[in-house]
Length: 356
Ligand SMILES: *Cc1c(COP(=O)(O)O)cnc(C)c1O
Image (cartoon, rainbow, N blue to C red; front, side):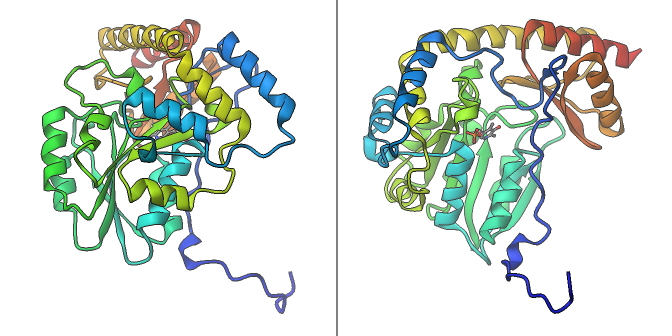
């Protein structure tokens, strides 16, 4: 390009934005254990309704997402005004930042946690305040409460945490929420809620009820198996829920996704049965890893975490050669999704050989 050609001025905030690394696209002979997707294909009943809905996609979707919001409201026993949808729960998280945070503001979250947090925070223009996990891979909620300043506008609490799988108990989380000033929004990201089995882990929807500064994020991407359709939602009091409706991309949640999400809630029993099988696989995988001698944190999600340090990329490469794509974080560790039994077996074999 010639020197005198001008380029559009882009916002300073976008400079050096960390690139979101999507899970690698594996070829037909490899299993994808890198994006925490549901390995089961869509339920036949859901698929049928979705296919039928395709016949009218020349029309715009329902902008108010009325049927889905009302299904969600009755499923969770909350007022429909407290439900807001978006293009995946990442889309909703981005709207929450848009509604609360900008240049000069601070956004607090644990690190390492969900990769999208630093990216969407930077896009908002706000500053990330990353609070290191404890040595046993958990949120350090005391340190997070201490990190709150006059500038803090939003706090992400990822429960259970992606990528470590560790979850926060009721008392600890309640104590934290009691410490956070009421004008700071606490976003409890429960993308993996349906995989939680430990009764000590609270349901964010219970915590939000008498706390106007708490928003709960849920998604249809993981347990409900709709990752490709991009639909998630928040449950929050007004005016937060209202702000989400104001910041929504018009017609953002497409008509096919709306139908799929409604039908998935109606088919919830069958979908949760599948989750139960994945939870059983998780138990098997964790037990086997420990038998092999690995130190691995308990996981309440559909993945496990191996703290491999400098060996991380080597491990990921060996896994890929063996036929499973995992999600490495160089120098830290690898996150491995619980997938098909066959895929989990390949991963366990790689893990075993890696120790020899
Ligand atoms: C996968 C995931 C999501 C879900 O993202 P969608 O945009 O709903 O697909 C949200 N939060 C966390 C922590 C996740 O791991």
